[in-house]
Amino acid sequence: MVALIGLAGILPVSAELPSMNEKAWLGYFVGVKNNKFQFGVTSQGKATLMVIGKKGEPMTGKLAIPVEFRIDETLPDGKIVAHKLLPETLESAQPATDKPKGVIIRGKVKGDASFEVTVDEARGGISLGGHLIEPGTLTKNPLRFCIEVRFPNVYADAKKDGDKKVVKAFEDKTKGDRVQVAWADKKRKKLDTAESIDATSKDINGEGIVATEVEFASYDDRKFEFTATENSLMTLSNKQPGALRDGFSLTWAADPAKDPQARCRLNLEMK
Image (cartoon, rainbow, N blue to C red; front, top):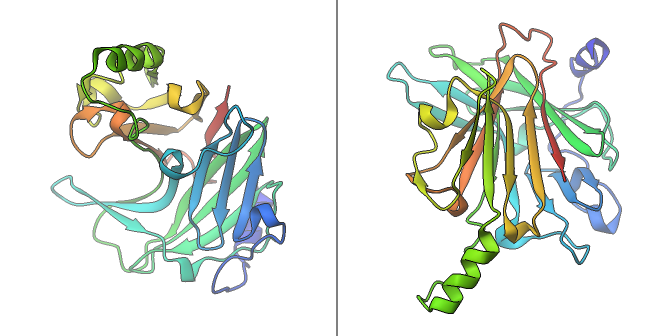
């Protein structure tokens, strides 16, 4: 890892990241695909996670799961300002690949704050990391590098016309849906995905989440398993109180004071 970080210091300047030549990966700098999921980062830095359905094809469109790399700034009143990456600043010393191992991407946000993203294929899953390099002109408030995984409204196309048979069929289909979190204090909490909740509350997040399991029937009952390595945590959130199946985010960040070499990771496996 030390060698990789050293290499990142001599990354060449580039208008955008290179792209793979294979038809299935045109426009992608990094891609991983197996029989359960597909993950890719485009040459513009847009990352997406897609489940491979029973027919062997990626579930795209409304079921695609965006993954965002960004820098969050915490204002004195506690509000968070999310600074998105600027595609034109992206660079990497490595070639485009569908077998990422220690791939490093560098970029900036508005204000010239720079960050580094690490992408690895690991044990049939994906391992992501990253950290703030320089604050640029954003020196007034605390900054942290974040990775946000955004689950969409997974039943946006479901019929909800009040017909009893339709409602019963929907309830039967979704009865196995679940989101379960494990907090840093090792306690666990199972969340009702149909119940309206404030996902930003401490009742949901505790002192931070170290593991999250997500399962929705709309993804052919695939189970997502997210884990945060030591000295990093996850939090759940939604734009407003509502059912988790209507959309929520999982955001990962490391504690830079405890992770000076940026070894912390957000790991994803799918069952």
